[in-house]
Length: 340
Length: 259
Image 1 (tube, helix red, strand yellow):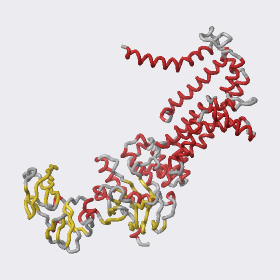
Image 2: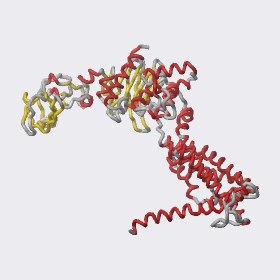
Image 3: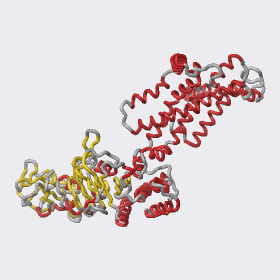
Image 4: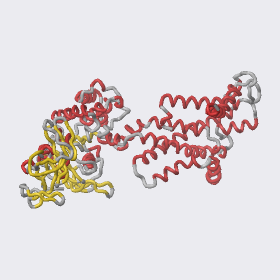
């Protein structure tokens, strides 16, 4: 078996009753990779994760893990770990007993168990809390217990459901670093589900962008950020000016503008920072201005519809309603293979 | 002025009617006289002591204890899986089951008792004890299902999924994760069921036979013949037993969270 397909999802279709949540999904994941499933709620990312874990029946298709077809394997024999968004700790047990839970079921006990559990608890920095009941811990600590509880089982794949969404900003950064460290140290294959592009870009080796139960684009964070395949992905990663192309013309409602663009592109997208203000052939009026520290963000009313741009805050501010010129430089645009 | 007096007055009257009879009974049970009377004539513990010497009280106390404990355990054995299934799975007809289960609360006990006697005990020749056991189990079942359901509702189902992913079977997850976390609810259901069964009169009234009576029925019978304060003494003892149990439950388990 080639190392390029440690976990493969083959033509996977998942449904809740008659409602299809994921259709014909194909994905190959390499051993040791950190994958982000990124998409808005309802895109099927959590459903896909639950199917890999065995918590959701597969309608059709296959899941192959480490050369073994696990499509019909019960969840408790899949060797797959999952850190729930709510952490799902056992409140009647101590940190130690939470982490020991799976090992005890395997029949481990005595000094071997003690050593392994304490090792896992130490690896997430919770040694002083080992004998505490879990409800007494903070959210960040609880998450680390959940992480240790899954890691100690040495799963083939560890999945995390929205791992950072319940933490405050400071803890989020801390946990992000922690997850990366743990992953590099253990070489574990990890999949995490998120709706936050910043998390996905910062953490993942590869990002799988999902939409309406199908994969929209797979790529490295750089690829997703700089070369979104579609208007949907572009919108998701912060391109705010997205236009369709037809016969080398930018199309916005009734208006068409001739533009030099790659011949195969179906659309063009600009980040606000890629739209220069005060120069260029296009004209608009300022609808709103907002100050964002070192940048100033403008929303312009133009013949192309609303255009968002941001410029250095050191430049003099344009008043509301004033007429301004702007440019849409083709060289600064991301070409989209699909407009939608 | 009127309004300011009205609220405390109402409260006072409510408390009087709630607690008054209890105070009178307790006072009467310490009486030194030979008949139940209030205010009591003198003070003695002889009626309290007499309670323990009445043979039929001892027997019916045993019957009542057996019904309360056995019936509650049986109701929990039936009720816990029912509550669990209704909370975790979308079952066809779950609403109907929920309603059926609470029927014994709605249907007057006197009808349940009469029906059991007429269509269960007499035609089938079922013993009175068995009929009492069935009736009490059925009466406690609604409380068992409700109280356990309430504590299951507070328990997230992803905890069980986490247990399964750590290698537990579905059943293992139930016993290792669900059961320990609804322990408080189960104990509350037990206490509530116990008290309900122990104080049950209307159903038990129809289901008494030679030598088989629950304690409240026995007390009624005793009072028809003898009018000494020993029934008051017994009532006080039972009341304090109930209060003690509920107080301990509240103190150690937060009983009122579940009921």
